Image (cartoon, rainbow, N blue to C red; front, side, top):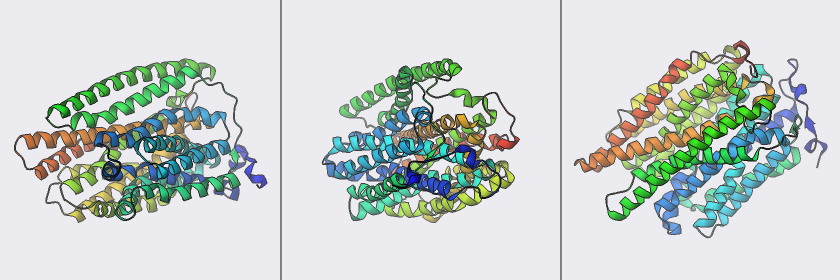
Length: 504
């Protein structure tokens, strides 16, 4: 093991405005984190397409199969909020090796799973590692990269955030049609191991950890709060998707009870968690320091990110369902249709980052929010006769609009904070993405299913009913996304933002 593997990068060394933006050691570290985060997030989105295959292969019900995604989301919601503390307390190197070890172990267990129970457990282990990666990546990037170059670096992060979820279903579809569901994990495992070995060889720590006491009640409240809300949201679809017979009615009643209890517990615990953090942060002992919201620019950017996540993650879930249920195309064709948008987001990320560094966020956010919102309004016109190529063009345009938004929002939000708050800001952004994404998916699927069920009960043909449900779901997404047009005019580049107490 070389000396670089146990050394550290002083924060001040990366702040110089002269010479290269980053040295070779810093560049290698960021690319390593980008690659690991890409693999982890790619894995997160592959399960949806595989559910029907798993139901048949493992002999489980659709309700059981839902736990393969619910358990993953729950674990993410529980772990991500505490990463702000963990990144303050432990070294970058130790956090990376822990995250990739957990992810690699979970992937191997999933590949070898003989049955459903072990597969769910494997997904929980995977999610524990995945939850650490994005906050770790963003905190490290903000610490190392000087303000004048953050846009182009955040452009690479937006590639990870947008491209991995978009191509996940495509990769999954190809593997399912050829070698089976286990190879979704079999493909990822050697890549994860390579990232782990590379991290053991080259990963260095950034800055110095602080010896902070952990507040156990805050950990419990965080788990109950964020976990309860995400679990409750995951039950919305179950409560709305059952038919009219006695067994289905009982199942729907059980889902509704779980939904209400989970959301009530989640909201109460989250409120108590926030109250406790406000008290603890007065002596710098908070698990998740909420002083980041003293920055107006951070708060506005995070609000816009929340609305985009609500609309975007719901939309990318509804589009494949619409294509397969209404247009009657295969999972493979569906993956091919959404692929151009994914590639556009990936290719545009670094370019958009450079534009941000030179001109600031508004020149990107305003057209991006208009384009994304406009395409969601266009999707409210879809019907059973819409050509597939129209969907491909619309999805690509939506992806471009989102690409124009992600990089400026990441850069403006975290760049508005003092360095000591980067880890907390990164944890908050990642938590909002997870919770808002879960909410968007749950709400849009519920609306889509509810409208379709009502239309069928009224005598409509199944395809026409599904098309009607799709239109109303996209109407919800468009309404949620439209306020981002107004918000985009108020988000500024951090250098131009006023300094607030505790954040700038």
